[in-house]
Length: 59
Image (cartoon, rainbow, N blue to C red; front, side, top):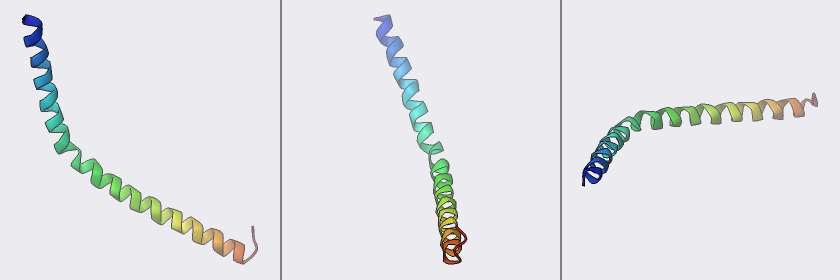
């Protein structure tokens, strides 16, 4: 019986930490969106540079 209570206590704390992590997960999502935008811009920039260089037959 004591073991069951202990397990319930652990589950309860896990649930609380899950609730907290839901709140904390909002900011990293915004960071990921910003990072994705930067990645896309850098990829497009690299593509443009490669196109320009191939146009001038440097590569």
